[in-house]
Length: 253
Ligand code: PGA
Image (cartoon, protein in one colour):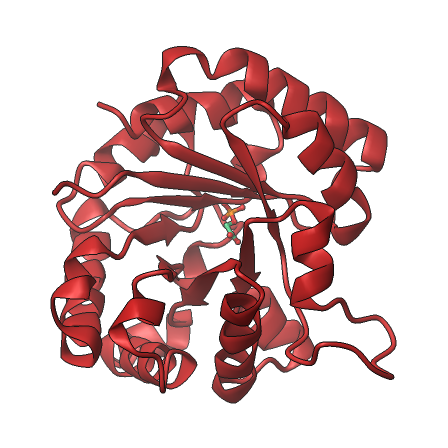
């Protein structure tokens, strides 16, 4: 069974409610016959999640949270639970993004707990991993990614693992305009799939591994044509309907 490609736009701290609704409508209108052939999601800021999900209703566009807290509720000022995301219309939750790891101290242990919370609420985790430039230059890429995958997904059985998407996002490629070559991406994606196979057996063949880091209309098709690159997590280029739709269409070719 070939894996259905999965492209998710990570809007980061962009888009008001009105802007989010507008962009979702443009995306829904522009999907055309790609709808249903590529899985498509967008991750608005929390404030716009509900409105974006309502605007996406009836279309093939799904909504993701950009982060989640692992507890169900409580005195955690500023945080949002998985059940809250689900009720607001999310199907997915992004965890372990390098900006969360680097700027907000998110650890592999936090990622593991967040993955558990998402799964318990019926949401599909998108788990980001990736090395920094210093780590790549020191030849430590596969070691870093191995640790992030094994610790972030620790304790999941094959059934739970099968609901996860992994996003390989080399930190040096995020928002920098520098993209990994398709060969660099494929090398790491294949290594990740091997780890997933060690962890969960044959379910690894069904798990989508997205590439992220300066994905653009010009490079998306080449990246996603690699055998283990099953889609993309797109930041900057997901903020404009035309660019994001071109990337989604690139997944089909
Ligand atoms: P970028 O971001 O496409 O702007 O590089 C990707 C991401 O951070 O998910």
